Image (tube, rainbow, N blue to C red; front, top):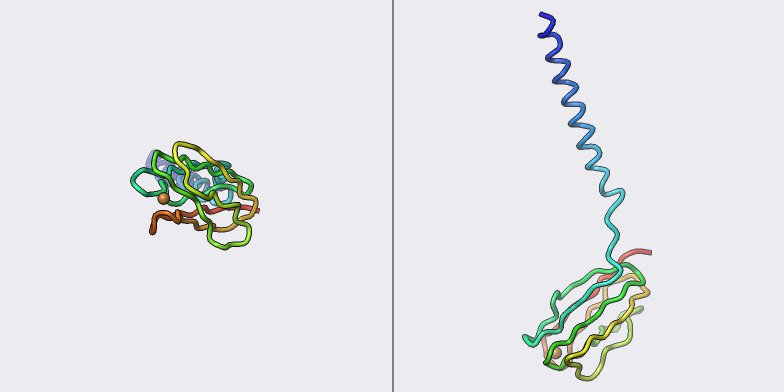
Length: 123
Ligand SMILES: [Cu+2]
């Protein structure tokens, strides 16, 4: 009889423990992983920015690594966008820092449809 009384108690304890564990997991959004301070984008010979979208923290740096085909990075007219990487750039890496939070779409004006965006997150 004694053990029968203990078993439900143990089951309740186990459920409470599981509940606490789930509660801890749910606290995750209160302490999200911060966005990275840097990101790399490859401007490929296949006429694409890879990845097409990157995210960095405010003040973060994005480096475009230009492969053998010449490309540029021309930002949409969005307040806070950094200077364009104009002209035709091949076999070189060029960085821009992003001081302002927001979403900054860009394109390569040499290759219609070749576009990407940088999302800058945080205060
Ligand atoms: Cu291009």
